[in-house]
Every structure is written in C-alpha cells, then in structure tokens.
Image (tube, protein in one colour):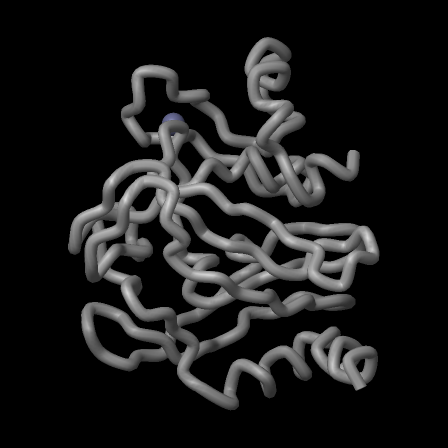
Length: 195
Ligand SMILES: [Zn+2]
C-alpha cells in the first residue's frame, strides 16, 4: 500500500493531483510577501531547539513542471506556484513540501532541518524543522540551503543575506570553499551527505 502510494506520487501530474487534495499548512507558520518575494514566517513564538513542524515530502520523478498548491499566504488561503527552484535534487528525483519549500536561504539561518528514517531502511522520508534561535510572530524562518543541496541542480545565486560570514555565491555544499565544507560536514544531510 505504501509502495503504491509512493509510486503514485512520482510523476509531476500525480504530485499535482496530491497537492490539489488539500490546503498545505502547519500551525505556527505561514508564507508572507517580503523583500525577497515570498518567505516563510512564524505566526507564534518558538524557542531555540523547538520543533516548528514535522512533515513528509513529495517526490517528483521524470519531467519537472511548475506545480500549484493551496497554502496560507498573508493570513489567507491562496494558490502558490512551486517551481523547479523550490525542489531539492535527491537521487533521481526532486523533493518538495509546502509551505517548507518557500523558506529562504540565509548563511546565518534561524532554523535547521533534522531528517528521519522512520522505516529504518536507510532512506530518510521525514524531517523536523527546528528553531535555532527564538522566533517571535513575524520573524522569518530561514535555512542554509548548502546543508541539503549538493549543488548540481543547475541553480546558483548571489546571497544577499547580509550575515557577517555570508558565503557569497550559493551553489550547494559542493560549491562551498573547502574550509567551510569541513566546518559544515557534521550538519549536512540528504543529497549532500549521500555524495
Ligand atoms: Zn549569505
């Protein structure tokens, strides 16, 4: 049954049908418009180390296309477009979850993802988004993309996070200078770890 469900999610059309089935949201967070377009924001207080939300993700295999999902934007249910830039490359597929895929990058992130393998088969299928700092309503949830993106998805960008230790160009873990890779090796996951 689980196997059938997983296979059913794999084409972009099947994932779109899954997305169409409900409003994708977590208590305590919502998407808001911000200076960088859209971002993920806290709607209540979280303490450092607290799990903000836990979620599985959807896998797209084969041709990727823009997907659409209903979620909470600025306090109301709205339709958002999930593009290839929102999807993380893993093995031969791309993973996404809504609204988590709208969290922006920061080189000094406010949250991190802790991945789980509940079936114990050596394949992570679930993660907790955990606060690294105290978050108050209206604070942005950011994450460090280099901790779960190896960098071969063809998408790189100049970071404008403004952190003193900003990496500059963000092109996955592989794109980081060697000393930063060594510092970060303990906290990488998913595709970056697999490599
Ligand atoms: Zn930065």
